[in-house]
Image 1 (cartoon, one colour):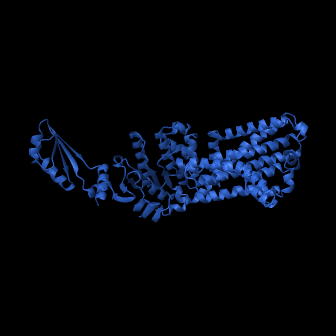
Image 2: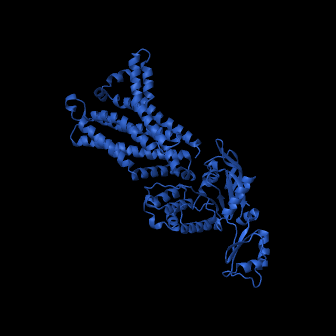
Image 3: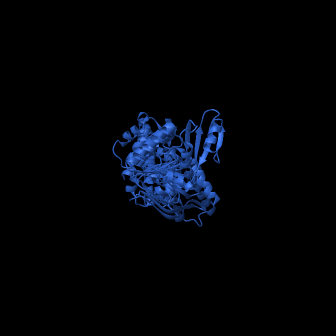
Length: 276
Length: 305
């Protein structure tokens, strides 16, 4: 445990030194603040709560940005250290490979959690400062959104490690990471939509659709946040989905958790068999 | 005698390439063993096998009595390793980096300060490693290998990129470690610097061990001649040759220098004959075969077989 902590602290320190933490936090804060000020303009007429609109905007933003940041910091975690020769040195110490992997995971997750909480927190504070009234339900939705964003980040950190453990060099890892981002964030939903349109509701049942949505962590995240509470579902136009989809928030969170555990377990397995 | 490192007909192939092929040797405490060979001769693979980072396809490896691939933490704690290309995060300072490794190895508190002092990096301890010279990075690499006074030190090409002064310092540290009973295994292709620093030399070629012994033993096996060079007054070379009785193989370099290659058994007889009272030379120089010659000899012997 001490070893894992030591490794994660080193990861955080390196993240601070090479400005990853600053860059990720700055990016998320800038985008969140922009969305907050742009998004809070129409609330007067639509009748949705100011923070609800922010939650919807930020959730949509998260789906694009957080997986990207997570993959960027994780894709060379293993293959990069192997290429630089630091991995052989590290593994000559009394350290198990599993510990290396989990130590890095904790460190990267800490960086991501910090960037998300500070970035999105600033947006919420800005909203308060401008004097918008915010209900308790909206706060709960905001908290859930922020926490699940970190979880979504963890999913893609784990996927990034799996890529990093599998490929032979850093350049490949980068390419594969971008490919994975494209598939999960853009192509999967487009393909799913195309399938639904072509099918016209004949073969694809509601149950199949639910299963298909769970196979993409970004969809699970989207459903969890946009269809989660009544107000937000109405404002996000997802109310129809909520009625037909039977996926409970707990099931969606479980799916996200599984998306962390499975790639991590696979990455640990692949890494433990890899020869350096 | 208990051995710190024991390799028993170890082989390791990568696909069809035999990186290491049937290598056996052992190392006792207090021995400094040099692994010598071309690039690709199998030195780094041997070190990785001893670290447990690669598993042998045949044979067995034991370091401090354990299979290193088992990853026993108590063994790892008594092992120091310096990789061939040592790289540290350039954004961290020397002290931060060394502290991390000290903690990872469960070393004494503040051991990093003592180590930085010992390798002469105390003045640069709080500078970023990005500002270090190659020699300073190499010294930092050596410092991390010395954490916890290891019983076995595996140093992969430790002196490449070091200037002569740093090399001297490096071998002084190696001798200190040897004096407290550490087994030091270092790979090198700078052969001449091993003279006087390595107690034993293992010569590798194409993954096979082709020679193993002290430098003297290897010289004896190789039966390479010692070059004897005699200097006389200007124009005195003719007289000197006559005095020696015009031995076969004598070469006249110029008017006052002659040279002769003497085999180990002829050497003493030749000197007795030549260097008697009244011998007409002013200076005598003897050059024993160096490691470079030995290495070339063992390689050509292997090729001709």
